[in-house]
Length: 209
Image 1 (spheres, rainbow, N blue to C red):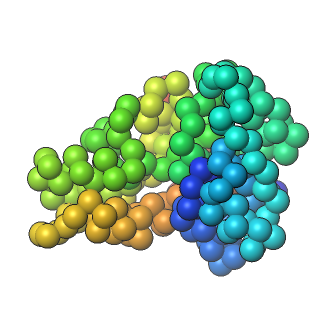
Image 2 (cartoon, rainbow, N blue to C red):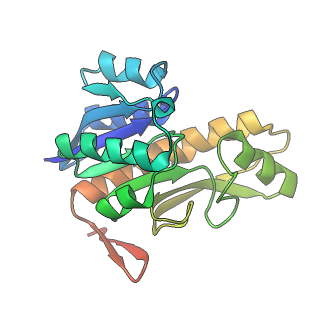
């Protein structure tokens, strides 16, 4: 069984989606063995505790820069024998040294259809505000591997979600989570744990057989 370590900073709704999928038997070949939070007040830690999952806090504010933080995080990940790292609302930039140490073993979910509405500054409600301002009829979510470029790693899965008349950023955010993020994130995690993902020339390929 592969060890899945989930990195969080806030409420942990994506973590909960992973936990629920694991309970339903939808994550094959791996299990969530640890939750690491950059914020001691994150409700995601409560979710982990309530589900019997080990957790630890590594506060970002205690480190001088991203490199020092990433070095400390790398030590914890190695101690936990992490096979896969999932960024689930993790609000700290990872240093390139950690990304390279876990090349194609870190995945993130982004609330848009990359390459639309992604990159620096596109996070949380900002993504949905921009989508509504542009008047797009479809948005969605993307699960991708993490590389040195913000939201620029190989795309694993995408799922489209309709934009409806009268949507606010908050309403659209909820629909994207419910209809896309909470579905394709556990699916991508399972694909990884089943060794059904391959990266060739910067593109991720899925073995659906």
